Length: 280
Image (cartoon, rainbow, N blue to C red; front, side, top):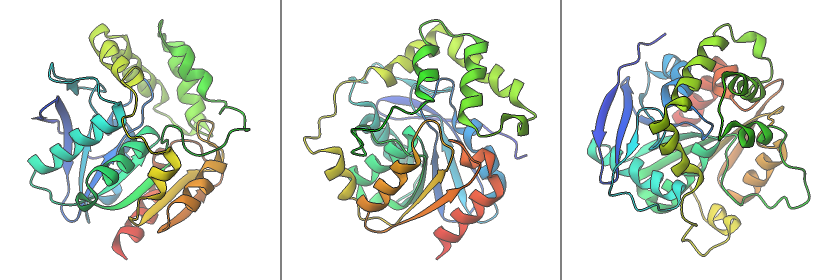
C-alpha cells in the first residue's frame, strides 16, 4: 500500500488537504459525500494501481477529512463551490488540464468542473455518480442506502457508521479492515468542528444555475466513462443508463456483485478500465 503523504494548499475559500502521487497524465480523484469520507480512504487502492502511469491528485473536498472552509466561504451551492476549489487547486499546482474521477457526490463535482471550466477537464470517470436532481426518475423508490445517511446525524455512533459502511459495499466480509474503516470515519464525524464543517455540505445555498439538471448534464461533451456497481444501494443502476443517454460521448461499465464503492470492491478491475479509457 502506498504511504499516505499529506500536503496542504490554501485556496481563496478553503484550506485543502491532498495527496500527490505518481507521474504522468494528471488524474484528480474526488471522493463522495458520505459522513467521514476522505480522498485517501476512497482512493488509496486506485493510487496503488495507477501511480506508475499517472499522477494522482487526491484531495479531501472542503468540509471533509482535514480540509476546511475559510471565513471567505459564502455558502455557495456545495457542488459548485467545491468544483471551483478543485479548479483552483489544480491551477495552484500548475496543472492546466486533468482527467477527473468522481465517486457519488464527487461525480457531481466532477461534472460541475466540466461545466464551469471545460478546458481544464480532460476525460471524466463517473462512478456511482450523483448529480442532484438528475436523473429524471420520478416514479422509482428512493435508494435503500439513503436511510443510513439520513439517520446518521444528529447523533452519530460507531454502530450507525458500521451499518452505513456495510450498505456501501456488496460483501463487507471481504473487507478485513472494516473495523479500521469504521473507526477512522466515525472519529472524523464525532469531532464537533469537523461535524459542523460537514453540515456545510448538507445545507448549502440553492444551485444558482437556472437550467434543469438534465440540460446541464447533457451539455457536457467531454468523453466520459460511467462506472457502476449492479448492486449499488445508494444510486440505482437505472441511473447509469440515464447518464449514458444524457452524455453524448460516454460508455458504461457495470460490475456484478458490486455496490457503491467500485474502486474499493474491484480495485484492480476498476483501475484497469480507467487506465485503458484514459490511454486511448
